[in-house]
Image 1 (spheres, rainbow, N blue to C red):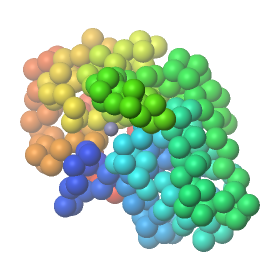
Image 2 (cartoon, helix red, strand yellow):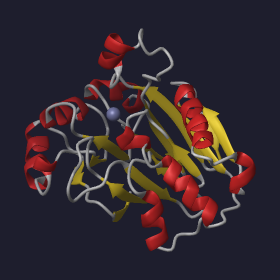
Image 3 (cartoon, helix red, strand yellow):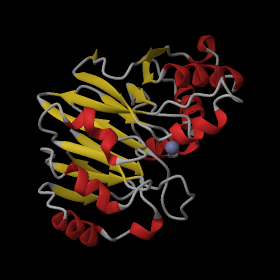
Image 4 (tube, rainbow, N blue to C red):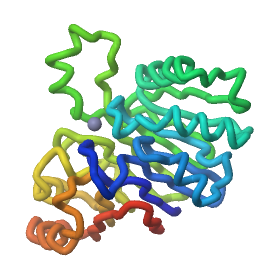
Length: 259
Ligand SMILES: [Zn+2]
């Protein structure tokens, strides 16, 4: 399948790179992993059919992951999409987005296509067409939760990565992590053909050190800070030092790869 990285920047505003968003396309379906990048403008520029994406995965509430959802929905409405949109993610994220779309005047009766909300639970596989999604919870927002959850009980502090099984191959999207050890439930299920991983919330070396003992064929690094731009060779040598034997790719904005 094809992975197109709409944005590879982390939570800091980058002058040259967009926030999170990875478009996965297979012959029969399409999936957008997070929507912090200006997806609507990119899809229009590339003349993508408005029925793309079929599925949207929302990992957590940070704006660099969900900040462009309402712009995308408005664009798909005005481009007369008709196919249903299936949205997966933590239950409270979906509730918040549903509410936000209503606040943005994007009513279900208005937009011309149904949105099906699919709350997921960590460790419970969900089959959707040729995809099987299995969420895993990360600790990305645990520290914030310890300070603010009591004062803001309506805010969602969950962050879910996902294992994507498709056509006998296995992919992992890390979402945001506090530490690579949170990938354990995703990496313990056998060979991983591609790990799409963030690289901003822990030292680079920690990632390769941790995944070296797992059968990961390729790592596709995204969501990284500006100081790592064009440092793929250095990351590859760190990976080698840590005895990680898979391929290492530092992704660039708007570049597609077969994964
Ligand atoms: Zn985040």
